[in-house]
Amino acid sequence: MAYEYDAVIVGSGPNGLAAAITLAKQGLKVVVLEGASVPGGGMRTEELTLPGYRHDVCSAIHPMALASPFFQGLHLERFGVEWIHPERPLAHPLDGGQAVFLRRSVAQTAETLGADSSPYFRLMQKLVGKWDYIDREVLGPLSVPRRPFSLAWFGLHALWPAKAFLRTWFQEASTRALLAGIAAHSTLPLEWMPSMSVGLVMGAVGHRYGWPLARGGSASIAEGMVKVLKSHGGQIQYDTWIRRWEEIPPSRITLLDLHAHQFLKLAGHKLPWAYRKMLEGYRGGPSVFKLDYALSGPVPWRNPEVATSATVHLGGTLEEMCVSESRVWQGKVPSRPYVLVSQPSLFDPSRAPEGKHVLWAYCHVPRGCSVDMTEIVEAQIERFAPGFRDLILARSVMGPAAMEAHNPSYIAGDITGGALLLQQLFTRPVPRLNPYSTPLAGVYLCSSSTPPGGGVHGMCGYHAALSAFRARFL
Image 1 (cartoon, one colour):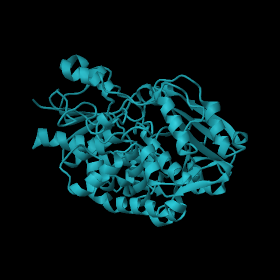
Image 2: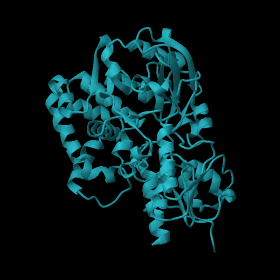
Image 3: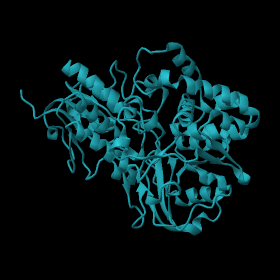
Image 4: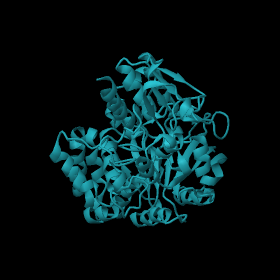
């Protein structure tokens, strides 16, 4: 049978584009079908508040992009992407005008941590040193490790619950807070395994590569990836929503940058009963409540040094974040939520009119929550930046339903593609030797519902594409 395309990719998020580029580099005729009028999925930048104020719709800071073996091979700088590195990758304010910072240097970070200086340096320096030996294993499916002892060392530390790990390793409240804020990116309760894995990975990556932002917004990354795809002969079609399985053009392989439950809805009638039931049991993560602000000036942080970081974690102490994240999984709204903040216009003036600024913030809420968290989030910002509300010119409010409406892959407002539970770490979305393959011949999942999960790294798409190519073309 003659096909118009060798490969059809549904969805142009970072993983869909990664899959398309990987296959186009192999000489295949590739097309990406995107429902929106622009590429990127979560990598979009729009004027959500006022004209001239450019806000990242979902992803804003990109540590995993620089750490990703796939992205490292793209050389996006040649296609117009410019990475901006703030002086300090991360700030974590504390009460009383104090703050703790993740610096690029492990030694310089350790020097600020008092009694924890030595244990922090030993842990992170060793992890940073091992990163090049374990990056593909950490950012991929289960496989035979290149350095089994290095991976085993990482696993012995990463599988801990963050709360227990931090209380065991560190004495200082500031050290515990810094790493707890990073671990909370897992969206898991910090009493659960393997929440510390995210804290270690993103902490080490911050030291190794930084936590950069893209000049002009995250949309520039998507635009750069599209340029790479086209340079290898790939195509992309916009405004092409796939609502029925039969609407996907026939090809030798089909890759879906879709949430596992989207795949179930689209192709459930074609799937075997057992596989369908396992997909139904795939567990989603919490939702996010997101706010974007147009501001008349920079955020008035109680500690002015917080302005040296584009990324700010507002969660207080380890104990506070444990309460906040646990309440979310109990179906309760936290009264003092852990809030992730990005202040890109301090480092990229193109994001706002001269003298003005944008701010990006979100917190975790129970799945599908309909509570308006605006006042609660702003109270948490005011806690560390009194006078913040006086700067607000306009705000954009996106609860879970609005997040899903903006990107249908964010089912119920879950931006992670499914919970990072221990049983869903490497076997997402179902236990299967090849987690990207499906029972449908030539059909593969390549979204964050597959290993290694959420984030702008492209590794889900990269691994899925290699798997499909080896099975269908070699």
